Image (cartoon, rainbow, N blue to C red; front, side, top):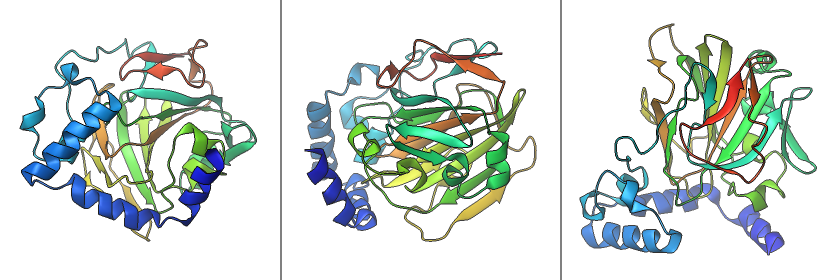
Length: 280
């Protein structure tokens, strides 16, 4: 099953497929959006009891997909002592950055510099540090939140492919998260720097941040922006962005700042706001 799936992804025009999907996902035509939403809920067993709005209240499939939750649906762990999960999803991998390299799957890895779009200076900060890769499945809540309080210092949009980011693809495509289209966000915090990288995937029609709005996705050109200290300071657990047809978040932290929850392993489910590590 995996070989035909991977082979198909290699020949499919990723960006054209994603643009096509995006047109339907953004449609406000009632019969189109209602049909998409209801079929999606049934196919993926989406828990609508947590959603802040009923099905009929969404303007489009995108509006539904990036749905907000009811107040209190995701209580936050103590961010003074713990690192928070940035999203609902499953742990793809979690561990140490060894010799600048991040483990993806057996026999497959990529470098922090590659993930950050060639930013060697930023990658050097995370040498010997810590990473966590969290995969958001179709049924998950698709807003991305802050794992810690942070002061945004830069963003870098990195063009790339749009392979699926599920476990099958992670096990079969070299450097998956460092070759897909992505937005790398670097923050300063009380314990140094950390990165939250939003990685695009097949049929992902866009990435949006709370400070910059919708990114111009599927662009062939890299874009980088710097921010003055204090311009965008976000609390732990605050929303930082969202995926329009979900994907993966990769967190990077400097060495000596934390230790991951030893009970967490690849495949474990996590919820936004739960403690996934402890500050040292």
